[in-house]
Image (cartoon, rainbow, N blue to C red; front, side):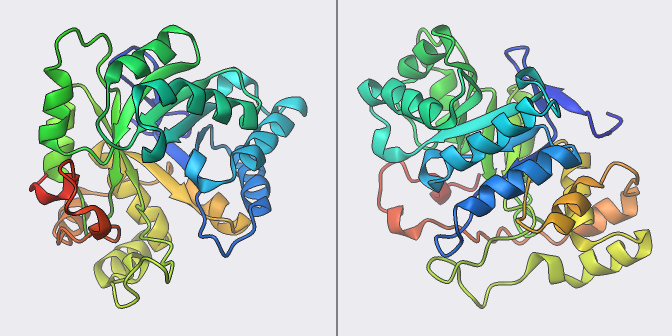
Length: 298
């Protein structure tokens, strides 16, 4: 596809998802108000896809930013694509709708464009939320191939997941999972495309820094772009929906300026070769859980 600032992918339910989204997560040490200011900047720059979650603790702040930009005429509600996510604590069928409604109340929105679950649960509860008009599309996050196949084979499945949101960067390019999801009509959405937030509480501080990768840096210099812009462009050209995150206004703007250049095949091949199946978020605390997703190859 020809990529431009308005580019979207059509999901399996017919709804469209913008290919570049703005991520709003921040470590606890950052003030929640930063999410409000950054989201307003992102919308002014051109982002129309906003990704948030209950567990981020900033839904009210992000909601205020969206409403302010709607009130001042920058965007209409239908111009924005909002993604929310359900934390595992609420993932029993009787808690799904109350959790979604609680998030909508904080956001002061009537519906979400996309609602994502992190672990397998009774899909009927998600389907009822869609039927009730509380959410337009339903997806999953951190699911491996086997878990997706289990959902797709469920008797009476009414709506298949539209997407699978997973960690995705040049050190974990998820190519096998991308190819599988594409074969099933499921969009792959990548988080941590620029690397992790490097939160000292849960990230190995000796881990490699994506944006300092020598191959990435060399390619960026050749195109007169930042390493972040090239990292984003790489995954956009692979067909991944990218979530870019920053609270710095300059970088928020730079990260959206990825539609005016193209990476040739040799650059794509060089960046794909950087894959080492390395996770910044291995979730080892849950490795003994029977539904732990990262034990499989993909």
